Each structure stands twice: as structure tokens, then as C-alpha cells.
Length: 292
Ligand SMILES: C[S@@+](CC[C@H](N)C(=O)[O-])C[C@H]1O[C@@H](n2cnc3c(N)ncnc32)[C@H](O)[C@@H]1O
Image 1 (cartoon, rainbow, N blue to C red):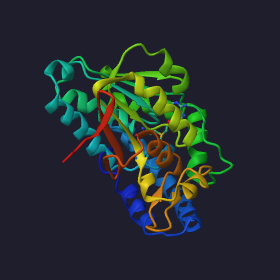
Image 2: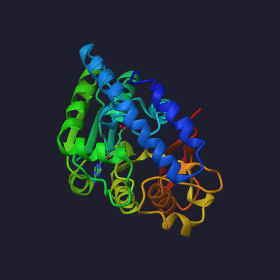
Image 3: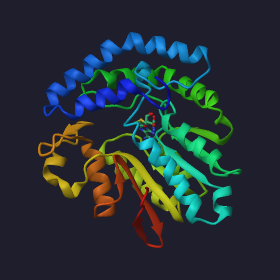
Image 4: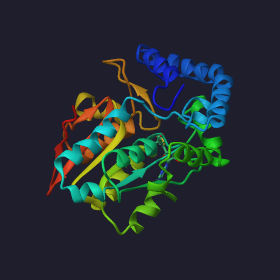
């Protein structure tokens, strides 16, 4: 397993995509974590030993669908092609929700590879337990809450960024977005939302982020596998208490809170690539972004 190609994770996604039943999905996901943990620990130790970033089952450090990473990279390349060179030199990215650094590493490398010599990434995260376990019984949530609470995830975040050679452009603000964002006095070219998936949290993150976005800047996020237009809003609302659910029509898993909050905010279908959504601010409007 490397930070770029997380094969076991991809196999998991392949299997889960074919499961049309939420209970079966939960059991399979739990089994995946129980069986994978010992191997995950060994892989984690190996990566530490050779000084490479680690994202895998251990500490649930491989978060979200890895398919979004190439599109995040392409977002920076798209801005680099379509913006003034001065904008790119000073590119400022705000990331809400960082966990073990999967997305931070991609943004950090993209800054370095696209001539953002004065660019920086700010990652906002409380690095503390945040998942309500009453509606979310999967083992992965327990693993996340426990290791966020005891500091293991933050330690891995710091190690990963250092191992990837991007610590110099990445800055961390430890705290909740609702407390930190109102205190930020600069504007950003890219804002990436990947924090709590609860509908109220995503709605708040969007609300607090939009005023911080520069004109011509991009706002994007993870976890939009289905758009609100494709689903019955009442069905989506009925599953707000769970992080992930299955669309009965397509059998595809989706995040009800993200689907609802993003759909409600933009009021239309927006450009999205395998769960990664992205729009660009143009005056009062938000335009779709075409990433090849
Ligand atoms: C899905 S993970 C982020 C994954 C990360 N972007 C990656 O690519 O690996 C969600 C993160 O959001 C953080 N989070 C939860 N509530 C938050 C809040 N109110 N403000 C900022 N971050 C929050 C959690 O601590 C967790 O690290």
C-alpha cells in the first residue's frame, strides 16, 4: 500500500459498490476493518521505518474515495492555466477537515508542482472525537473517534506531511471550523470542505466558507456521490442520522448530509467527479468547472 495507490481500499470500494443492502454493507465494512487491522499495523510500521507517508486501514487513515485526489490536483492545474501568474504564485488553499493528511498532502504537492512559490495550505481540524456513534455503528467510526481523541491521528498527520516534504507550505489550525473560520482575515483561492458529514455541519461549513472565497476562486469538497436532484429529498432527510446510506435506485452509497447541504446551497446540479464536487466563483454566480 502506498499513499497514492491504496489497493485494498479500492477493492473494498469495488465490493461495497455492488452491495445493495445497508446492513450487509455494514457487516462487510466491519469485517474489512477487523481482518485488515493487523496487516494495516505492519504496513504502517514499515512506512514509518522507510520514512514514507502512510494512508491505510491503521487509524482509518485512508479517508474517503482516493479517486478524488487526481481531480484535486487537476483543480490546481486548472487555476494555474486560467489565472494570472501572480495568483498562482500566491495561491492560498483552505482545507476544512484534515484527519491524517490525505488531502493536505495532495494540496501541498500541487502547490509545489504548479509554481505556487509563495503559496500555502491552511488545514483546520479539531483533531478530536466528533462522530455521533448512536446512528453510526460501523467499527471504522469507533476507530476514528478513539484515535482522534488520543492524538494518534494528529501525530500521523504531522508525520505524513513531513515524510511527503510539504510541511513547509502547510499550516494547521487546531479547532472547529465554526470557531476558526470567523477569525480568518484572509481570502482563499481554493476552499476544500471535507469535515463532519452531518447536514448541519456541512451547511455551516458552506455558509462560513463562501465569504472567505476570492472572486475567481474555487470551492470544492468530498463525498457528493449522489446529487439532490437525483433523489427524493424526503428520503435523503430521513437518513440524516447516518453518515452513509444506499440509494435504492442505483445501489450506490452516498452521504445524505452532504447531498442535501450541497444541493440546497447551490440549488442545482453542479460539476462533480466521482464524489468530488467543485464550482468556481464568478461575481455573484458559481460556475461549473470542467476538469479533463
Ligand atoms: C473525512 S475526515 C477528513 C479527511 C481528509 N480530508 C483526508 O483526505 O484524509 C473528517 C475530518 O473532519 C474533522 N472535523 C470534524 N468536525 C469538524 C469541525 N467542526 N471543523 C473542522 N474539522 C472537523 C475531523 O476531525 C476529521 O479529521
